[in-house]
Length: 180
Image (tube, rainbow, N blue to C red):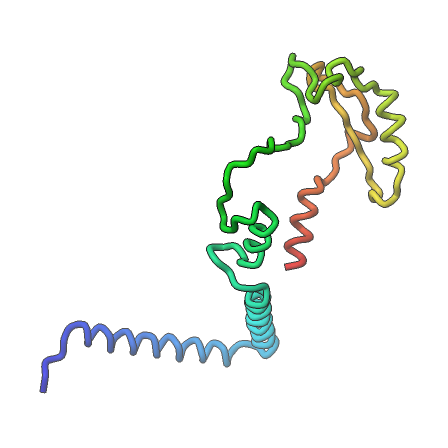
């Protein structure tokens, strides 16, 4: 009879330990109240269904290559110069971008020609434009606004600005978690 290696002894010991742990878990499962077992079954089925639906959605959305759908890559390549692929030649068109929202303190006003001489917004002008928009009930029961002049450090326009409110980004996170 061949000698038993130490790895074989460890393997058999691990098998016995796993079997004992499985038997103990089965005894605990059978001893648990019926309602608890139903809750765990529902949780397991829900998790498996969610994973199956997510996997199906990924599979149906098309073939993937390096984290990008190949159909999106092909459409993007077709919309360009026709050269295909990920990298295209250097463009001669200037890249357009939005002007900065806040100019540097002490700097000139952002934008194209003619903007540097534009008058600064006043509280009355902002109230005339923003007050009717803030009355829209589609914005919810609590509507607040605050426009500050960062250079002077003062509030130019404000409606219920001192009332605490939940930021929209926080609400978006809660809705996303609830949807998932």
